Length: 251
Image 1: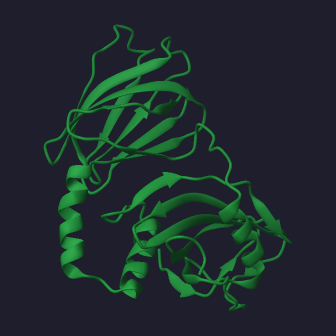
Image 2: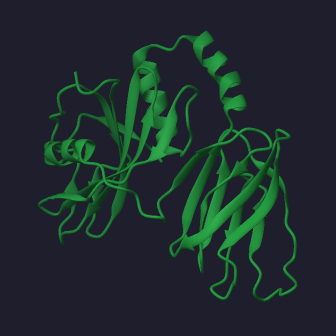
């Protein structure tokens, strides 16, 4: 994704500010964010009849171990994707149990037990962060002493790549979609650090004409940076957008 740092477009300002202050409970199929140490049991929700992607932040899976049910056509499957080190879990509609369990070993040598409920109906994602890895990276981060501008840009890059910076906590945070004209804005995640907070949004063009996102320059008070992946949205298209502001609210 090629991110273009811009002030917040006027058309988005009132919509996004409302989304920042009006959070609603996330549905089961929303992205899940979990912290887990080596040897921990991870409780999560898996989709039935759809794929669930499980990714390790700053690590990757090297091996997966599960017991066969004895009914191969009705058993769940765990597929290892070696390029990124992710795993994909597929639970068939006819799978009898309401729970799934298996073990996974990471490239860094950590072992995790997954004991998950089968409830979701749509494809979903689970992101696992190990605090032991975060501490090591946090030391490198602090040693570099990034300026606030540099930290802001790095936070935007991390959000765009589904990564988490050292010292930040990420969580799914779906808001009610807000609409101004034909543009719909929905908050989907929040990244909280000691000094900065990042908000990730999904933009949707619900109209019949393209929307020029780069035509206006006004930003909400206190916003440090805003970025999006394209200058315009064609009818029916969606795009990501990212807002960063100082911890503790708008200045």
